[in-house]
Length: 91
Image (cartoon, rainbow, N blue to C red; front, side, top):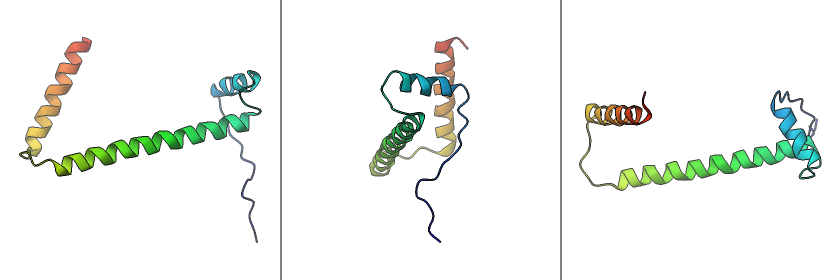
């Protein structure tokens, strides 16, 4: 039995419903469904961009021929960074 490629889906938007409706009312989109499709496409683009950044960072790290940092040393660096960050924010 064949299934429909585009079947109706019920989505509860909560507080986002007003934002979606505002986009429709502005004329930027013809329906809330169109707003949701655009949102999913934007999410796909964002995830692809983040994947590319992470992939590049991993490749950069693997290509780095500098000295390795021990696990304890790495955690110490992270703790120092977090402490400096908190101090700058007054936490």
